[in-house]
Image (tube, rainbow, N blue to C red):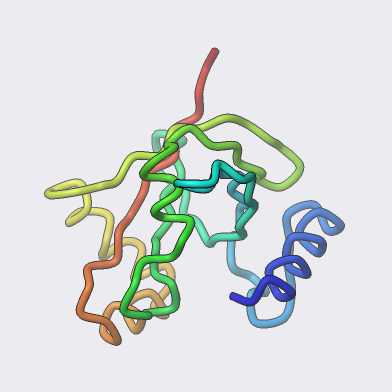
Length: 138
């Protein structure tokens, strides 16, 4: 995503209480606030999500099926405590990569909800990481 496109999605998200249009219309989007892995610079990135029955959210580091993980993935792996904007709500969450049987269970559910994710995986040799976001309660 270009920074200009990202900024326009963020502005639209905030103006429309969590909804965006265009090519992202109908896609559930959250804004994740994270720190640069090396720079610790504050960043905000719109990402698609799915809700899990236990209240956690799951996001995929698809990067549009490119051969490399998105920068935000490396940032979150380094600094897993993030802020999340979900609609008009903002909360702190801890991100954890889903691996093994947890990932194996989540992946088909995510692809069923968003078939494009399966297309992204088909276009790259890397395994697209899934991260769960758990709200901090304190």
